[in-house]
Length: 269
Image (cartoon, rainbow, N blue to C red; front, side):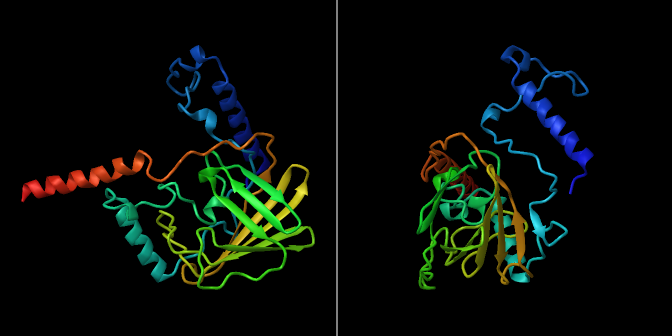
């Protein structure tokens, strides 16, 4: 955890940045003086970024207590290395591009993780269902809370098969039946694949805040389960259309680079 002084310093810098970006355009366009003085211009799309609220947490991971992912298994390390090697070259096929980059889904738990922009959620509760619409890549989760059993283990889905129940004031959602088509491009873990379990807990702590936590249990990938805490703050804004779609301009441009390399290699033979 950050100390109160460290948290206050970060908050002060955030407020200073917000003020700089709110300055008139003719002021923001002036170059900053050497040594960091002056007014920062900011990125061209800075206004889309979600600043959120500052927390004293130094890691989203609360278990293990050190805030780090637990060690991965030998199989997971081999898989991650293979994915890393693929990501360091031009994609030869659409299969080399993640489902996130293809605008299909971030998968789980990615769809519920805070990020840089468009990470807002519309949560609708009815007597028999909870529905969560995710602004980023327009994922939608329909979670039965009427006590029905999970789907047959042979049926897998992009976001898994979720079932919810109440434990006091906490909504507990257990999700299984993930497919093996979603992978995270990182040096730590490349895929959760299928056969793992996600347990989420939603507890409203006040009018404007939900204590959101999830635990991942996948002994094939991680040597022990791990838990994340990412509080959700109420927003009065609306969800905008996220128009990312598979087959947009990025994919043909990505694949054209690989075709160009293949042509150059063929000409050298």
